[in-house]
Image (tube, rainbow, N blue to C red; front, side, top):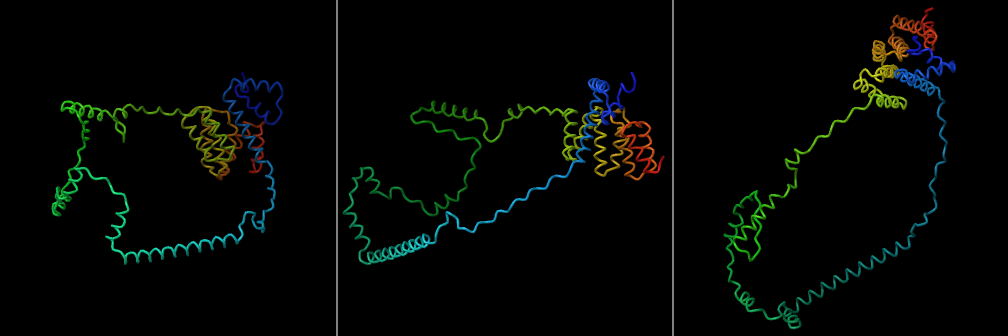
Length: 348
């Protein structure tokens, strides 16, 4: 088995350039079915190609201009005319005048009645015309004829009773009164049963210790799979949410270190950092990927490292990095990119 059979890099390059033959396409398809790393590499390369096409897309069309709606100067249909308002104000004024006249007349009548007849005469006048109440019972008559049977408490005694200290209520609830007509033994049994019922009631303002001990903690949530994190991060990167994409890539590398998705995410995250202007962090990410065992995106990592060195102004190291790309991938699009960059740097 040749090196191309292990990881057919040349077939990937031909596919991107449109030079893949039918037999080579079938060979690549069979290889992708059995190689998980190449499947991720294939998806990543297509993703990078889609982003390049999106950057070259045309500008969005201009928004159509809409005429502004001017407010109408015609009166509203439901607007009221001033005539009903004047009639309403006139009606309220007449009602107020009538009320004032009525109050004045009532006060004058009350004053004349007070000056002419004493209160006792008015009481006798109305008592003769009202129906008399029924005669009181002997017991009620006795109570009415002896109002001094219960002597009033002296003011000093009332003040002393009001200022006396009130005993603090006990924490235990008072026993419920027994129904009338029960014997002493029945009363004791009734109070005991009421006490037992009150003690058996559950607390209302909190949970009991048994309930607290019976609460079972929820099991910890299982971490998201590596494929799910990788897909969510790529989707966030395509939509322009760079912060969320970077956080998901870091989470993927922490929770699933050593997985193919985590290794591929190093290159993608480094490319994001390079485009965001953090060339030093991008250089660290590319070198960590190249130091590992994964080689699915080696060409992209080498090109990214060369670009990061150029951003940092390390000219000699940039030339060496582009020469390595040209040596390893001379027949690919990355090899042609390396040749153009070396020519711009004055290298043959």
